[in-house]
Image (tube, rainbow, N blue to C red; front, side, top):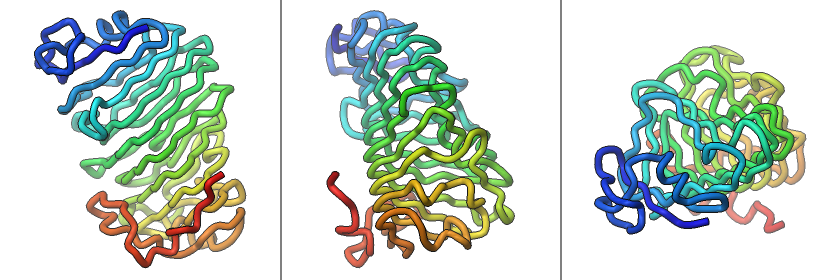
Length: 272
């Protein structure tokens, strides 16, 4: 178990032992091998372009943390289209964590094992309008919960598509979502696959088109202390201690999901 560093493409030339680009690994597989089971890979500031789909699983069954050295300093960016980032191994029970990244044009997926997948402190914003196959989360065949926490997502949709595709009990805690889907037709965004997230707490969901998202995309009955606004024309009640008002994001279309001082969400959450 060790902590090593990785640098953006073409910048890393070293052995991963120091937080300087010249010493960061250029290869994720090299960094995974050096970190070993239970290790941590710290991503130095810069843009990590995904020209194809990615799999971060430490090569098999062993725990691993992938983390931005500085909050949102490492930018994971899908090139020209949505890229899939599969987190965790295809078998086994390893715990895989993704923390502190800025990201865009990515679909987060889980390996097909029984691993625990954790996404924390992710700041995600799509940079183009395009088809988002299988939505933002594709957590499949995972018997343990996939936990997404303390993160924000500005998701750009075009045409009929999905919000989530989950069969492994994904849960959302203290997150904010803004769905940019003005051009999507009525009910164009569905749950997909086995359904919506299993549970949501202290999480804000807002769309710019109340008719675009199908009722099944978000099961309001599983939401606790959430804010749900314009997610669907029929989503105006239900769940536990939920707020059905405009959360008053500072500038949602431009990816600023901070709350205005008059937001009804302030103080509406729960600490437990």
